[in-house]
Image (cartoon, rainbow, N blue to C red):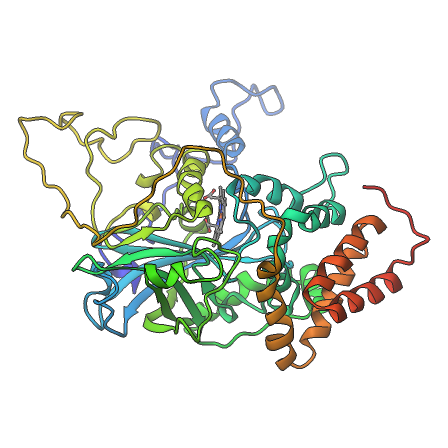
Length: 510
Ligand code: HEM
């Protein structure tokens, strides 16, 4: 198990004699005694233990993630089941049977740190692999697509899921105003998934993870592919209906945290099978949509799933704050032979996450044990000093690459015929009033997938109706029109139920 390993990230130390001390290690005789004049006189400034304890208490909270503030995590292992050396040269995949330790954090997106587990929301599925080539993070969601393809939209979109600046309430008008704005309707595919029962997974164990984005993987010969990763639950997909989810949000708001912790504690280790889809540059050029458009899935008939390995979660954190709250995942944390693609949303994420970590945890966040690349090691003498530098700061090593010292550098790996980019440096807004192509996959989901799952077309209409019933009539009309563009019956079903729930005499202002 993870905690038995040397250098692991899930260990902690407690003084062997369990004596209670000040932060400086001086034993405290009575932690509850406060120094004062006489029994009932005023307290003294020399009462360092009391002052230290109150002052530290005031500094216990760190900024919560914005977004994905609420989450649960566990440690585990990735095991290679199939040879994929023709696709990827990364060390972690190089031998069938090889195991790599990992941490996963599951999360909801829009809610605050204390919000309910069963909210209708995508689920984050972030994995940190502690590989010998350095830490690799797959920062995925449980949905294969996303809401936007212009990264500048992200803060706007996330704000519409947060609280109204005046009322401090979640606001159905803000939510649907954004999503039904003509150019934002590229979100329709993701919105359909969100409002199907997949938008309320029964547990973190019963959902899949998807890269969503296109990445670029290279083999040792330099041949490269566009890839998408699918992580499929071995427990089977299970979902909650809208009413079950709402009830649990009230009765057992930490339902999924409890389920994950208890499963692992009872040695019922959840597992997932990892697959990859590959696409050549030529195939990408022939696609009816851009390979960098993460509002689309790759048809599995044309781009079949190929199995890579298995993920098993087998160890609970010993301390939530140290190992889950302080965990810092970023798509920019990668290893040789796995690269980001030019997807503009992914490119923006490469900046956004480490920036969030510097703000949330400080510039030396990589020294926090859970973020340390302990299976490799960090050494870069020009990255020095800064707050909370606790690893010895490379001692007397010169603070630049000195000609007096010997250094080792990573292997150079090159892509055969890499992508070539050219063009003027211009502002480009991928706004496109969504064309029929942007609705096609959403329509397929409704007509070809949900139709085969008894009750799911109805559930989708119902889940939208109960949500949009809280919006004003003008916005509701835009919602009916948008879903009618997916399928006329879907639009009509939503309209009928919404108007039953919220007769038009009601007024609501945007
Ligand atoms: C422009 C688009 C995006 C931006 C700017 C963005 C930004 C962020 C930021 C700032 C965080 C908080 C990080 C932290 O404090 O540690 C976060 C968390 C997260 N994001 Fe994104 N995000 C974007 C799109 C996406 C997409 C497309 C996915 C999935 C495919 C995704 C998955 C996640 C996950 C799983 C987390 C939680 C990580 C954790 O558990 O710590 N995000 N995002």
